[in-house]
Amino acid sequence: MLNELKKQTAMKRRDSERVHAYANEAFSYLNIFDIQGVLKEQDTYKCGVEAYQVTDFSLTKFDLLNQKEEIAKYHFCAQLGVPYYIIITSEANGRYQIYNSHLTNGLISFSILGDYSKYEFLHWWREKQSFNQQKPMYNASERIAKSIIDNDLFENSLAWGVNIDGFSIDDDTHKVLAIFEKRICTFKPPYTVDNYDPNRFFSWLG
Image (cartoon, rainbow, N blue to C red; front, side, top):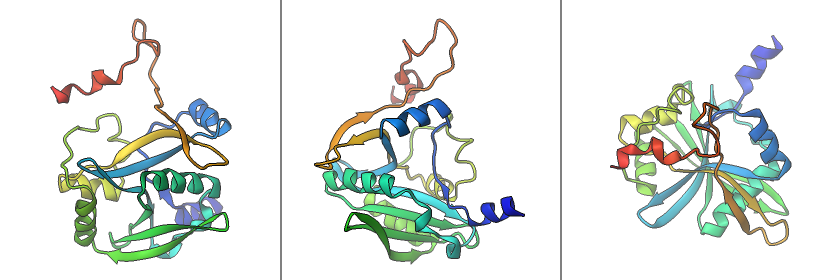
């Protein structure tokens, strides 16, 4: 009964990355944060986004989010000069709610920008990032198979934003110190982490 209640109240974060216990532990220990999406139109950054899926909008609970992580994402976006949004999708009706973030007295809060139908949301997204999805997400396809936002975007030839695997923030200046790429591979000599090259998965670029 308790597990069922947890499932009903969970805000499921959209995450295309593989779960890797050691990497997660190392990132947490080193205060390395990630942000799932940065939307970009040509050379102009538009916004940073995180997406969550709930069974019903009434179950949206921002107090479930980690303040430290949200503050880091807010400062990351602020350095780019763009807002940080949270997108909530309802499994009950397929609608979207978009929330803007605010930093006040050292705490992040969220205010709703609007409640959108699927097609209104796709229009909103296309205004931020209009280019088409070209690279098949073979490795992530299973992890996002039940993601409403991914299915809606891909069905309309839209692309998810740039994913930032990791970044660190200076505690005093709140500026980004470094950007990290998380490299996870299966140990199959002669192909190992020492010669791991993500470019081998991007042959679609020609």
